[in-house]
Structures are given as structure tokens and as C-alpha cells.
Image 1 (tube, helix red, strand yellow):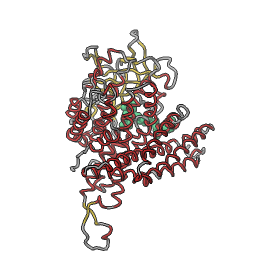
Image 2 (cartoon, helix red, strand yellow):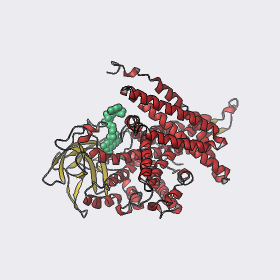
Image 3 (tube, protein in one colour):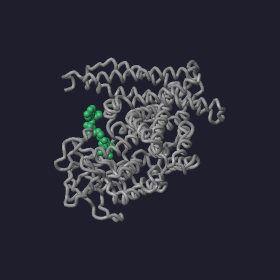
Image 4 (tube, protein in one colour):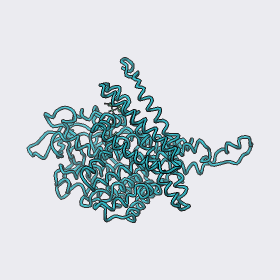
Length: 606
Ligand SMILES: Cc1cc2nc3c(=O)[nH]c(=O)nc-3n(C[C@H](O)[C@H](O)[C@H](O)COP(=O)(O)OP(=O)(O)OC[C@H]3O[C@@H](n4cnc5c(N)ncnc54)[C@H](O)[C@@H]3O)c2cc1C
């Protein structure tokens, strides 16, 4: 493997899709997907993998070094190599493969879309943020509250890579506390048009030279709007004004006034944007006044799962790099030969401590992929069946969103750090891609709502919804999977380990419900992050076990010799995860239920 290689784990991606989820069979029953079959899915995945490895991956390091440039006059230049790669992605039709054909998408299932985005993010995370955010913005603009002329003019241009999109929430004093947004929107004589003023910061892709126009989705406050999030409305604010036939007009007064110098994702422009600072900034209202957060949440929920996919892509890339390096790097000798003055030299993948690192990364990455793809598959299934079934499926997507966003991003960062460790000193220098993976991965725990906020959302909202109904549904499904695994004798230890962790999770959830129920909200929220980690550990354990069951069945059915190693890897994953990683759940459950609140005492950090 060269220093810039990126390898798509296509074998595992296809295992999850076609052996574990049996997505092609399930999807064939859904009218929306009836025209697709396994061959077509394979063709899309193979094409995306080739594009990711040969066209996108080469821009990763160059883009990081070159970064983005601001000309001091509102214009941002992205790394030069991004343009041909962007065109190639657009031409492949994979910017938003799962969007409807009438909007310029391909109508493919989400789960296939997710796989392609994992590949592009793994190949070049910063680069993939431009198509990723554009697709999320375009998706939002298909919502029925969007003025019809904007949907019909903008969405297919965005998916064709002519125009791009951003989401503009953050302001200097309003990051997590979005309700503190101060940007203003003033009505005009034309009821469809508003004039905006204020400043947004940290806006990804706030300007770029990849597309001819940008549609910013901006949260702002109308005069007399109530304080907090209820007073926020959402506006489409174009970089260039446009007519219904797509002709571009005058430059709107939404301009970048600076870009950030960052730790990672250097190819992604992170911009401060001034609205109406020197002229008129025109915005079009989406939905009705005060509906801003509700509408923006549609984009944010997609973006949160997007962050999980980005995390998975990075973690998989880092693991693949570490594995290839460990197989190749000769250093030291086998520990059994310690008395020998000149023992045979071995590659580092043979040292037990390096194997421990490789196993930790492998079981984490594989379980993350299983979780994220299975949630995308649920989403696809919402296109079918009764309303109650749809509500049930969406409820579980909702419950898993903080785990995908927060737990997967935290674990992905750990995977990247571990991958760097496998490289030793070579990991720390710029020649190999892992130091960039570490830098690029860190942002995933911060944006789209910090992981602390995800944890509070899980404990304060998702766990309480319908008096714990979402959690109970998840628990029922977990128990069904455990029942299936119990029929396989070779998995008895793993099933027992997971049952223990499941019980500890349930007891801890009840304990925290009581703490909150007694009015000790600070005490409950103090445990939100440990609780999310506990829940995430159990969820990933369950996915490891599920995959091990499928692998067991495949081996029993007489797997081909070339597949045997792959399936044995799945058995190792479940065993290693449940015996070495999952025990942390016991410690977390004990600490949470211990209820120590010493850090909340007055006078310590004030
Ligand atoms: C590279 C990059 C790209 C970004 N892209 C975008 C973008 O495209 N669009 C956009 O709108 N924004 C974007 N952001 C902004 C990002 O979403 C915010 O940085 C993030 O929401 C956190 O806000 P903050 O930085 O103000 O931190 P703060 O809100 O000040 O948080 C600081 C710390 O305090 C904690 N905290 C804050 N409030 C609470 C609370 N109530 N309870 C418990 N803990 C709390 C947080 O969890 C965090 O640990 C981007 C940021 C970066 C760095």
C-alpha cells in the first residue's frame, strides 16, 4: 500500500447489505425499489468503490496541504484538485442517489446511498462535505413548505453539481444554544421576500469555486418573534439571485468575511458570513414564521446520520491503512524467541499487542457499519406498509440517531488514534494518511450538535418518549436477536456476555429515570454521556453478535475457502468485542448507578 492509498472494504459492505440485511430481497418487495436488483446494486457499489479509490482518494492529502483560500473580497478557492473530482462524482450520479428521479436523483435505496457516502468520506472527508451538504440542502428543498419555483429550479441543479448548499445556524454567541440566534429577517412589501442581516460563523462550504451558485439555508428571527428556538424562521438565501428558469442575476449581499484555520478537514472551507453588511440580502421564507427549527431539524437529522457515516468512512480507512502497514512493517522478533541473539525478524502484525490493536479497530468498524446500514435499511422500509409500521421504524431510527452521531464518532476517533499507534513514529509524520485521519475525525464529535448534547437528547428526550416506548421497542428487537443467537451453540458465551450488558443497560436506564423523576435533573444529566456510551457499547455488541450468527450459518452451510477467513473474522469480532470491549459497560453501569455528584458541588469550577 502506498502512502496515499485508500481501500474500500467492499467485501464487508456487501456482506452487510446482502448476507446480513438481505437488503436486495427485502427491497424487491417495496414498489419504489422493484426495478432494482442485486446486479444493479453491485454495479453501483463497484462503480462507487472505483471512483472513491482512484478519483477521490488522491485529492485527500493534496487538499489537506493546499487548504482553502480567501481573497478578502467574499470569495473562497478550494484546493485545485477538488474540481475534477467533484465533476466526476456529479457525473456518476452519486451525489444523491437515493433522491427521487423527478428531482434529479436515481431513486436508489438509502442503504446503497449510505454505502457510497461511506466510500467517498473514507477517501477524502473534507472533499465529500461539499456534495454531502449540497445533497442535504437539496433534500430539504423538496419539502412541501418550500416555494414551488425554488424546488423546481434549484434541486436538480444542486444534484447536477451546478449549485451547492449550506446550513447556517451557528453565530458567535449561539453555537449549541441555537435559540440565542440574533440574525434578523425584515419583511418587505412582497410577502415572499425578506431582508436579512447579521453574521453566521463556522459555515461549511460558505463559499466555494466548485459551483456557480450557493443556496444558504439560514435561521433568522422576524421582528416581534418570541425569544428562543420558537422565534426562529428559516430562509433560502442565494449567493446569486436567480429566476425561475435558473438564469443567475445580481450578487446577493451574503458574503464570506473570513475563513478558519483548523486542525483538520482543511479542504472544507469553514466560513464567517455577513448578511446584508454592505447592501441588501434577500431571503425567501420556507414554511411559516417560527417553523425554522422544525424544518432545519429535517436537515440536521440527516446531517447527524451523515456525521456517523463520515466517522465510519474515516475509521474504516484508518483501519485498512493500519492493517496493510502492519502486514508489511518488519520490526523485532517473536516474543518466544527472546533468548535468541539473532532471531528471525517478523512483521508487526504478529506481535500480540499489535494484534490487540487491529482486533479492537476491526470489531468496532465492522459493528459500526452494521448499525449504520441497518438503520438506513429501516428508513428504506418506511416507504412501504401501514402508517403504524412506518412510525415504528422511524421511532427506532430516531432512537439510534444519537448513537450513530455520538458513539460512532467517538469510537471512530479512537480507531484513528489506534491506527496511528500501529504505525509507530511513521503514523505521526505526514508521509502516511493516518495523522490526517486523526485530525479530520476530531470534528465529528463537535459539529451537528456536540456529543454531549447528543447524550442529553438521548437521555432527556429519546429515552423518555412515549414513557420509554422507543427503548422498549429496541429491547424487544435485541431480545429477538439474542434468541436467534442462542440457537447457535458456538455463540453461548457471547450471548451470555451480551445478556449481562443488556440487563445492566436496562437497570441503569431505570435508575436514571428515577433520578430524573425525583427532580434531580442535574444529577441525571451528569450521567448522560456515560449512559450514551453504555448504550452504544451494547448496541455495537449486539451488531457484532448478529454478524457472528450470519457467519456461523455461512460456515455451517459450507463456505467457499476464500470466504472462510472473512467469516472467521466475524466470529473473532463478536468474541473479542464481548470479552474485551463490552466489559466496560459493567464499569459504566456501576459508576452511573453509584450516582457520584461531587463535581456538581458549588465553588469547584466557578
Ligand atoms: C469545522 C466546523 C464546521 C462547522 N460547520 C457548521 C455549519 O456548516 N453550519 C453551522 O451552522 N455550524 C457549523 N459548525 C458549528 C458547530 O455546529 C458548533 O461549533 C457546535 O454546534 C458547537 O457550538 P460551539 O462551538 O459554540 O460550542 P459551545 O456551544 O460553546 O459548546 C462548548 C462546550 O460546552 C458544551 N455545552 C454547551 N451548552 C451546553 C448545555 N446546554 N449543556 C451541556 N453542555 C453544553 C458543549 O457540549 C461543548 O462541549 C461548524 C463548526 C466547525 C468547527
